[in-house]
Length: 174
Image (cartoon, rainbow, N blue to C red; front, side, top):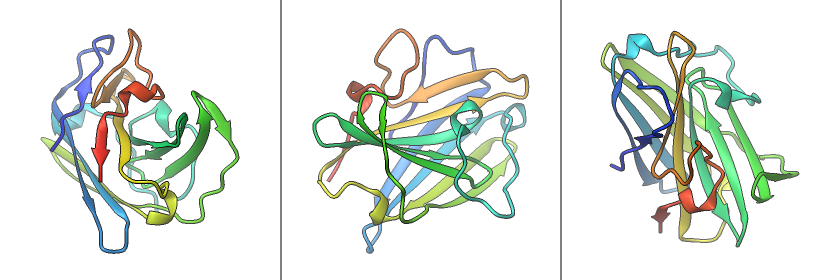
């Protein structure tokens, strides 16, 4: 289970660990499980929405993310919020968004206790690029109850948090 690391420029978070597990499903979907360990009561986590769906700006608050390389310079970005809301974007180059309308949606489930939070995602095969192996960058933005944000990733490439940098897509998934 790969560990996500807090960026050194982030405020000291109330978490002791942030990790990710991944597994392929028989139908080609990718199952992700983000786990946060620590003082969960110190985090600002929105409640599960009764009708979750696509929502912009999720990265401005607590949200788990996945970046997937597509071709030489392109990539897709997925945002998964504790509310069950999600977003998906496609880029042709570094931060150059291209038109893409997802034809499926992820399924998000959450569970938590005072010391652990888990966000599970079933990401349909239709949302993933067809080329294999997949090069992934797994990340999370964690907001505290005092509105401080910390930035977590498998690898940080730069002085400031920037999840869009391809050198941070360090996980290869066959």
